[in-house]
Image (cartoon, rainbow, N blue to C red; front, side, top):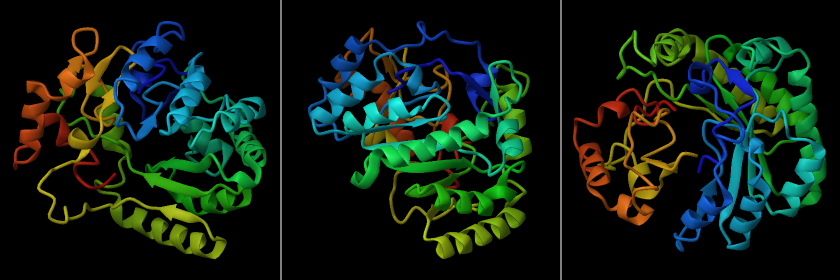
Amino acid sequence: MEVSGACNLRCRMCLVRYAPAIGKKQGALSFEQFLALVDGLPGLRKLTLQGLGEPLLSPHLLAMVRHAAGRGIEVGFNTNGTLLTRSIAERLVEAECGWLHVSLDGATARTYEEVRHGTDMRPHPGQFDRVVSNLRALIETRGPSERPRVQIVFVAMRRNVAELPALVTLAADIGVDSVWVQNLSHDFGDTEPDGAYGSIREYAAAEAIFDGGAPAAQLVFDRAAARARERGVELRLPSLEGAERDGDPRGCGWPWESAYVTHRGDVQPCCMVMGSDRATMGRLEEAAFDRIWHGPAYTSFRAALLGDEPPEVCRGCSLYRRVF
């Protein structure tokens, strides 16, 4: 669930940078909408309170975490970490947040701050140090409980991948539980080059390491893996050339197992789509989730994923291509 469509950053690889700005109040999912959806799904097992926006901008985030955890749902979210103060960390621990994934796309301030710009589209000196400091405070705050589980997320691109081994060293020093490396989510190849997604499509073409940059990136991955073994860091690396489906006839399991709901109430098949106009199965203001889940849009979408001609929006998806 995207609890906030607003964000305090404009990261180079994120759709937020290339779309009209959304205010904090305008972008907030209401607590009533949250309750209606979550309590309407008695079998819900895992809940990610995150979308394109920054979850810590939601005025209801802590109450949402507390409510979900109280129901026995494993709950957590991804954050850029800039607002993750010690006070917020303490309250998240008290609310029994299950996991926190913090984005850190570089091992140096210069590289990180050239990726994660402020709302003025410029680097903000000191931001890297603040996020690292917030991570250290989070680890100290949770203490021996080891909850929430803390993971650094690194989006690998041509501009930053060389720093991955150093990031592993930094992660070990901070004491996080794991480092998750992922490729860019989508190449937006299903969109028009001069259309609304033209800029992010151009960026993805220039920065994706799985299209043309794989040999050099693999050498870095190998060094990072060796460093992780030395330092005792759990490291997840993505495939650079794709992988077999292991007999699963589905091109992707998301539409059968999970769903993504935007702050506007748009129900989408996954969080990789980026853009409500690209694959919307229904809207909660028009129909209940259960009706959408079993409706004709979802049915036809799933059917396409069982064949050799997937929905057009899936063809450039890193998860579908097995390079995420």
